[in-house]
Image (cartoon, rainbow, N blue to C red; front, side, top):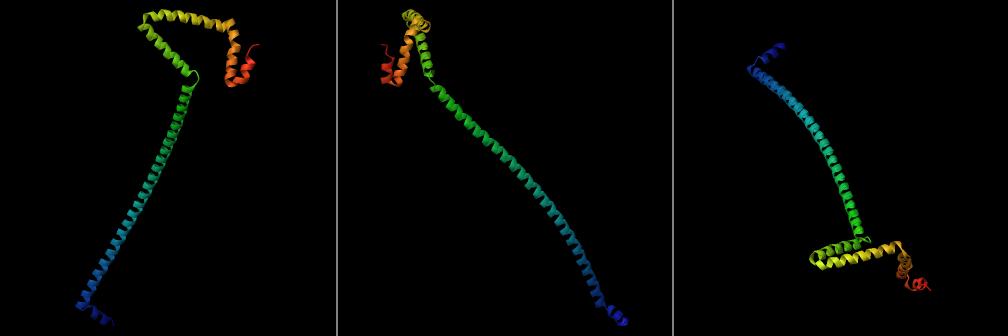
Length: 175
């Protein structure tokens, strides 16, 4: 059998077939090695890309959290500024409507008008000054003297009359 086998292998067609088969096995093994190295490279590249994607997602998430906190801070600041603006508007309207503010403004307006009148009409100033001196003297007498004692009951009765005119007018009249 050994001789038959050697005789069979020594045939040129079998030798060509064996050589072709050996070359095919070598090519097949080489392609397997190449494909395994390529798949290993592809797997490594896939791992690298996944890690990079995760890193970018973490960075994006962190960036979005920072932006959200900044937006929240800006919104709270805007709300605080709106409240402060409304409070200031209310304070301003309250100050404008306070009793005495309109009177002070009117007095300031009168003072300016008087100064303009003094500069335009020369005779007005001297008469005005004498009337002002008389009015000041009368006010000082009212504040410190007998006139204030006399006028106080009548001033109080006027205030009471405004709140309840029928009852207080009969009660405050001297008999």
